[in-house]
Length: 190
Image (cartoon, rainbow, N blue to C red; front, top):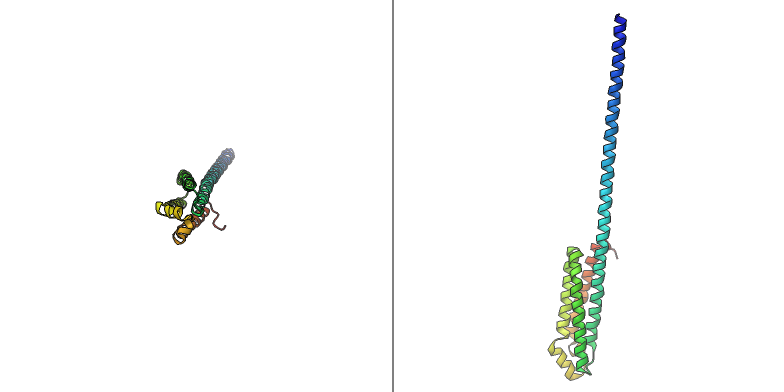
């Protein structure tokens, strides 16, 4: 009978060992599945973050591009005004109004830069916009426009140093904005 008892205990031990082994294997499989699920979740979260970052970069690129287009149109209008050799005061006033309208478009475009741009690019854009305000204030000043009208010369010819300096300042601010925008877009090597 002792042999039967030993055999029964041995069989019970084998069954218990098999159950413990199965339980351990099951727990390991569950842990592996959980780690894989967490890894998959983290990967998906990273992918979503990257997609969001790419979309935001494209929105910022569009805002910066629109701002650059509007500022370029404004600079053309300001150059047109400053280089007009006054033959007709009404034409000169019309050119001043065109520059003012173009500058208003820059201000509207600035809103998108403020909403979607990186802080450094926003600050540089604001400085560039302010420099364009200064150019318009200078070339459309009553004093220079009157001097140009009475002499028949262009505003730039009436005071080349002051007009040249204010345009140079705006060009410098444009370069600073472009550098900040490139860095914000991750394209600062261009």
